[in-house]
Length: 382
Image (cartoon, rainbow, N blue to C red):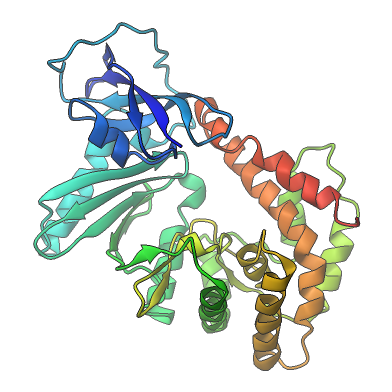
């Protein structure tokens, strides 16, 4: 699958210049900016999505972006109408001049660290993050900037760099007011294709990390990590889910989960293999923007989401055995059974939260996810 890309250009002041001729990009994923930049006939920085049309939201089809150039390019541009009105939910990195300011911050930090950057590559930009790779003679580093609802990621990494060194990316610097983070390079590849053995290892890594963070739960909450323990999760879901969604029995179910005896701890929130990088020697869990303090079963349910029972059941059984060893007398199997439908409901609330906090042009990325996960919650008793 490919996508057909049109770039509408503006200069650093935001003055519209026109559109480049459309071109094909080999990567279908709309948020992947690097192939868009590489395929453009002039030097550009992708700012944000303007429109997207596809049978598969977020992938393929016809995609139009707003992109910034230093000045009028020496290629023919097509006049196009474009609405450049500001929006209160627009990310700073999606505005003209925003990427330059963020990259400038990262370069200055690396200079102070004695790691000057000689090459900068835009890798991704969308409503959940903007990511650049900065290369230099002392190795690569990564600039990641996130919107306000993910800004606790830096706090999570600060704690985990102390409590679980080597298990998460090294946070070199952060500007909490802008959501900017500078991260050291993690060797390897994102483990999207992880087999069952590797998923078992990922679950074991996360269990160890969760046990290590048990004493830091209150500190994490004090530093801005969302507190979704028990009744707080109930209130959070009800505040986000559409009013016509049936939430009967949720509070009682969560109360029964509490009686299973597992402790609340740090939850990654999106623990699928693509959020793990490995090089054959070690694994590092990345992308902690969805993290919260709550029930640890949400991570094993996310790690096994979509797997056939004969693959998922052994992973869950191993997870249960680890928690029974760590907390004698607890009932992890019962907790998983009770929380399985709640995990779908929580994911619906996550996507509803995204939709409530991003500008309209970015909503096609997530619009189908809320009804998809709500349908799983509604079918919980089938």
